[in-house]
Amino acid sequence: MRQADGMKVKGKATRRRMLVALGLTGVLAASLTGCLHYDGDYPRGYIQDERQISQVKPGQTKQQVLALLGDPSTTSTVGGDAWYYVSQDIHQPFAFSAPTITDQRVLAVYFTPKTGKLERIANYGLQDGVVFDFISRTTPTSGGDQSFIKNMLGSFLKWS
Image 1: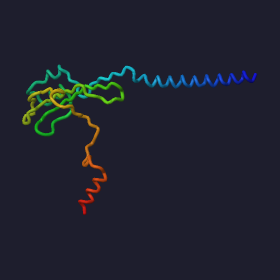
Image 2: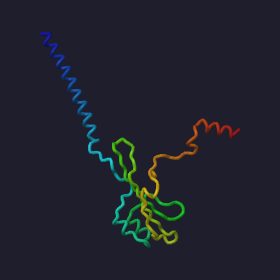
Image 3: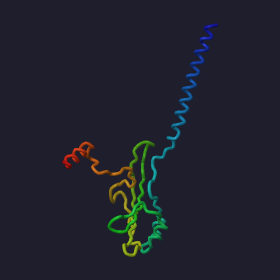
Image 4: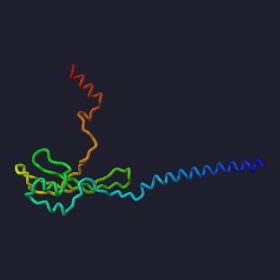
């Protein structure tokens, strides 16, 4: 009888381990289902609509252009009055891999400085320039390339 009881104990422990292993496998499989059907190509920024762009004509006011195209991604700050609508096509093969820019378009809308009327429209692509990061998550700091100790010693030497 004791051997039979020992077999039951071993059987229960083995069954318990199998159930725990199956449960962990189920949890792992359920957590990975979010990675299925991952489409690694997506647009970012302004989505260009050719019908709306074709309605924008020279001589229109800023309010008319704003009603047709919406808010610009950025505006010029120096040397003229221009609005820029930036869009990028991104390819990211896996959810946690680094994205690469496959296409970039910049729709530039130029206004005359005195009247504020639309002067011309330009549509730039990757072939017209370089890729730039218009949503940068970094803040430039002064003395960023030097080490902290080098900055401290430089300040101390200037002081004496």
